[in-house]
Image (cartoon, rainbow, N blue to C red; front, top):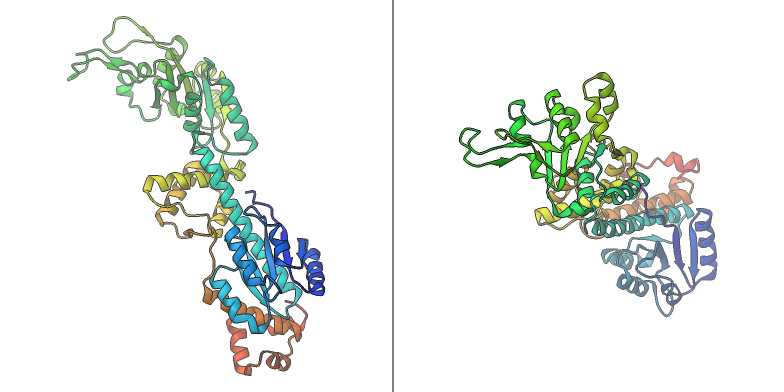
Amino acid sequence: MTETEINTVIFVDDDADVRRANTQTLKLADFEVRAFEGAEAALRNIDASFAGVVVTDMRMPMVDGNDLFLRLQEIDSDIPVIFITGHGDIAEAVETMRAGAYDFIAKPFPAERLVVTVKRALEKRALVLENRRLRSAADIASSGELVIGESPAIVALRATVRQIADADVDVLIEGETGVGKELLARALHMQGARRGRPFVVLNCEAIPEAMAETELFGHEAGVVSGALRRRAGRVEAAESGTLFLDDIDAASPALQTRLTRVIEDREITPVGATEPRHVRFRAVASVRPDLAALVEAGSFRRDLFYRLNVVRMRVPPLRERRGDIPLLFAHFLAESARKFRRSAPNMSDAVRRRLLEHDWPGNVRELQHFAERVVLGLDDKPMRAGAGVETPSLPQRVEQFEENIIRDALALTAGDVRKTLEYLQIPRKTLYDKLKRFRLDINSFRQGGF
C-alpha cells in the first residue's frame, strides 16, 4: 500500500536559540523543517492540503500558540498541532488537547521526545490525507468505472477494454476465484456499442445435464410439460449483447460440446424446433488459472479453447497488486454504506494494518465482504468516524504524558533515583508504582538508553 508521503514540520517559536536548536534536532532526524518566528508567517505557508505537522510554543507575543491553534482549526481541523509548554502551562495544554490538539511537550525535554512525537503526528497526518485521497478516488470509481485500481496491470486491463469494447471478438478472462472476472466482462459490455443490449450470465458449473438443452437453447410451446408458451434459452436471450460463460472450465464434457457448436456456428436449435436460428452475441468466458494445462490433460476441449482464446485477459490476484487494496476498500466501503443506509467510516490505523498484512486469499470478493462487516460494525477491529484515525481518550493522553514526564526525568538524571525523586517531587513508593505501571526499566536509563 502506498501511503501519502509527508515529512514536513513547521516549527514556530519567537526565541531564536530555541528555533535553531530544535530545527537542528528535527533535521538530524531527517524531517524537512520550516522554522518561523511568529504565527502569522507560519499561517501563510499552511492550507487544507498541508502535508505536515505544526510544532509551536505556547507563549508568544502578538499571536500565541493557542490562537495559532484556533486559526489552524479553521483551515483544517485534522492538522496535528504539538505544543511546547512550561510546567505552568500544562492545564492549558490539556484543554487544547480536549479541543483537538495532538499533544504537548513540557520543558525541558530530551531531543528524542520531540522526534518521537513528531513522527507519530506525521503518521496521523499521512493517514488523514490518505483517507481523503481514497474517498476522492472511490467517488471517481463509483461514477461508473468497473475495473478499479491504479496498478500497472489494472491500468493495462482498462486500456485493453477500451481498445476491444466494440470489436466482434470473443474474449477469455483468466483469474483466481474472487478477482472480479465478471466485473471485467461487464466493463467490456458497458463500454461498447452492446451496452444497451442484454448481458446474460451462464454459470457453466451449475447447469444440470438434464436441463442443459432447454437452458441453453430454449424450447417451443407445448414441447415441455406444462409449458404453453415458447421460451427463449440463455443464448438467444443474449441476442446482440454479451453471453458471459462463467467458469467454463468447470463445464461438463457434454456442455463443452454444445458450447463449441454454438460459438463456432452462432446458431441454436430450440427443443422442438425444426430449423436452426442464427444468433449474434459476443462470448466472454471466465476461467481459473492453468486452462492450458486442462487442455493438455484432455479435460477441456482443445477446439473450444482455441475458439474462445481470440483475446485473452488475465485479472491478477490482490497479492500481486497490493497497492490497489486501499482504493478498492474505500470503494466497497462507500458502496456498503449506501447499501445498508449507514455513514461510511474513515479508515482507522488498525484496519489499515489489516489491509496491509492480510493475504486476501478470497481476493476482491473477500475484501468486499470485509468492508460490509466494517460498515455494519461486525468486525472485531471497527473503524472510528471523524478524524480518520483511532485517537486515545483524554485520560489515556494524560497518562501517556505522565509516562513521558517520568521517562524524561530518568533520561535527564541517567536513572539516578534520588535525583529523579527531587526532580519530580514525588514519594519513592509513587515512583516505583508508576515504573511498574508503565513497565519502565530504570536500569536501561542508567545505561543511557531511552
